[in-house]
Length: 237
Image (cartoon, rainbow, N blue to C red; front, side, top):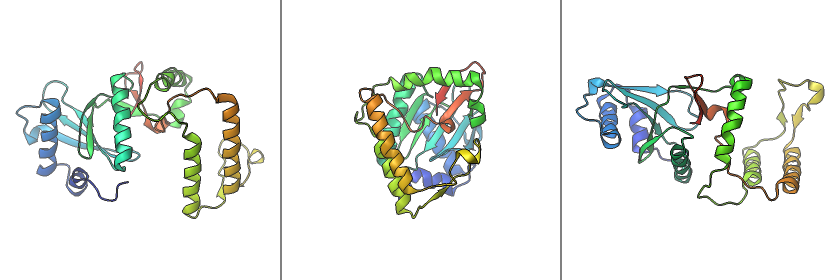
């Protein structure tokens, strides 16, 4: 998270969603990016969307005709993360792998609002849903992204483990839910996790040394959305 919040985050966290300040701001954004015309504050509704992992999200609707709704995503990450995330989102949008990008401003971006539901672990256990996910993921992995091509997954694992240690983390108690206790240790230590990463790195180099694909840490169940149309596609939100 950024150390100082942006003006738009301050606006939306310190005012009621029905306040003149917020209604005037979303009308300004609608005029700038969606060509809204002659919109009154009484024609606009702002609803907070819960469930965002690292951002504030709001659904903006109007009583106007045509595609006037949008999702306002207010960033809460450091600028470098916001930049990469916006590039990712724009490329996904261009390829039809995610919602459309309507525009961006300081501290936020405007996206297409897709009536949908966020997936859960239970949802993806449905074989039909699993097949859909399996079919769409290769399209993400095949994207040529304008980022360094060095492998970072092992580095990220080690960085997270070091951060865990820095914050005072020690042995982690395992709460097994899907396997019996006899198959699971009661705890795992930082040293064991470090050796596990070393072993995984060695194994990965032996098998995948000449394979390099794009991946994204948001390709997780909480970020996958299924359009309410049961036959609709799966998108990354």
